Length: 131
Image (cartoon, rainbow, N blue to C red; front, side):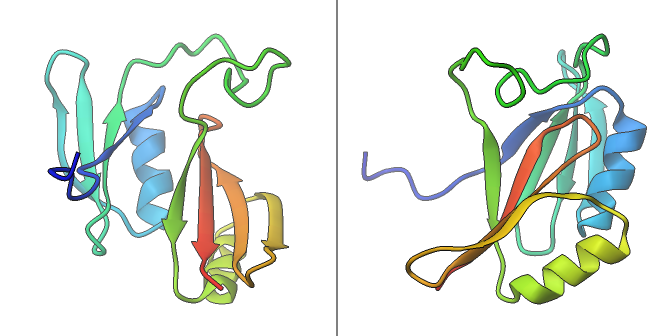
């Protein structure tokens, strides 16, 4: 469909607005509004224009990401990949904040570099610099 012109937002299910807000603010996201709507949802936006909707209804009974941490491979979105222009600077910033890098950095055949972290609810975030 040629009418698609971009991604409007990324929905991320979380257990707590307070802990999610603290985590995503460390990545530079700013709180806009919430909770609103029937789900409910809180909205945060990064100065780059990346918008996330924190869906505030996750089950607190599990400590696993059902899409990533179990042997059954369920369909669904497994992670979001954020483009960066200085992967080393991002890595340094992540490490200074005490956020654990769960995989990488990995250098791809085209020279791109990526690494992964997880938020407070085990949702996966990739930082990716093109080669």
